Length: 639
Image (cartoon, rainbow, N blue to C red; front, side, top):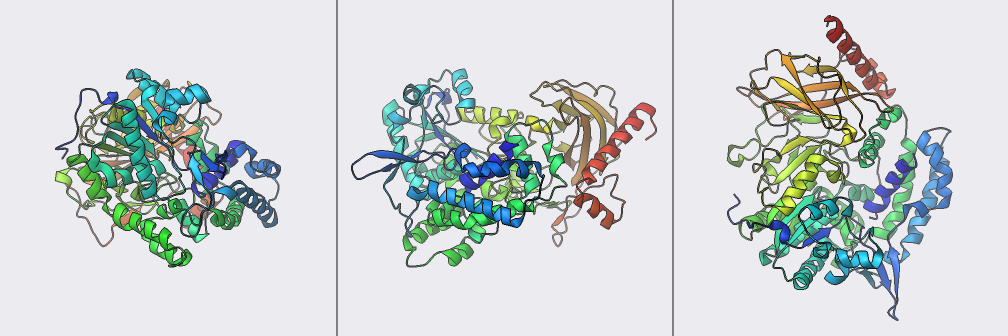
């Protein structure tokens, strides 16, 4: 359980102090040097003294943060004992003091400039080359970002690690300053390797820096392929929480985040659904003031502030005179760079020959509690520019997407994301319930990233049917995925005859489907061959019944299953869009409806349903009823 607290603290420390006309084409895209631009705070920072000596001042080791915290890990994680507000306040003080002590040397002046002479550990291409990093710091050096997945990729394309480079920057500075640093770094890499272009793979804050670089320097035509993973293009919700000083963690969503980040195939979130974890909010709200003392003048924090609340937060915290330079830089980022991503990134593709691919997560709540469709950290809108329904709602039946996009349908299967307004509508891939930073743990996303980075086979979302624009995450923590056999993933038409279930376990857990229920269509499934699905295997489960003759409406499919894990029973819910006939007339006066769907308990009085949900047993009861229905329906043919 210590990992749970580690993730909570990691969120706090890491984030809060935190059409293709002229695209390049080559027979060997993998031949270009690879520049890796990591997420926020990944760069190691050094303080340079007046006599030229250097001291490391940033790269936190969470295991060493406050020995006194260990006293609280067991009661916090297990939920035993009584953690009073006084205890939470004490813990906040401990952590807050640790933060201040650890970050004394990396505060900034009110104008956003660094108080001390701070530099990244690795600056030149020669220093940042993976071959040289490994020779100096060891084969498993953490400075080789994403090596746990990139090692196999570069090996499969016969790429030596002498052509892979880790980009470091002073992440406290704004994205425009970091992009200027990336521009000079790429020039250095080109000089060092003799190449004329590079490929870039990036994540999160690295995505914001890369998109800013492409917006400002893309015309130099020094990038061939750029893959932006879960990018914080227009900021992160946690920065808003820091600035409002009112963070309220969505503890259950955070536990889901833990499951997927740690690749847990046991559903630990069931254990916490009924827990009141309000004390975590008390702790975090107590920590925010000392954090703000450290990071309040960091340009990157202000560039993380989402555009829709930027002016409000700027008026609340920044002085027009004292903070003039900081305001000037962040105004430029918000009003010139963010506001023109669509135009500038499109120009990179159509005029400057850059192949840009964006990979984003959807349909998770923000761990911070901000009610936005997100990947757990970055809202889907901020990550992609797409129009999103409010969290726990979807677009109404018959919804008409904002832009026509050449007649291509751009609404997600769950009817929660309209990709027609995305910065790059034909180059953005969405994975439902793909959590921030876990893109390499999803086999479909990982393969997409590899193809987009090292080949020219992924020009748009229509380049390869194996990589559709929308797909459910296949992280092993999901246990299974489901798609109909003839339609694109997430959609259903009269051509379909079966539901294809795939066991995505990474632990050799055999899976058995107990029951499949459908809300929105009268379909019945024959489960004879679905009782013993081995890891990596798929099985087609035929159905009977007529697919409704209508389009742009949603049905919900719930798959109840058993596995061999510690929590042997589970359910996964999928939203599918019907594409089978005329769409109902869209009523723009009611653009959104609830994502709630019919369950065996939907007929209960609302008050009783609310009570069961507050007790944390509503979903468990639904699952057990579905199990009973599955047993009787398939064994005795009674239901």
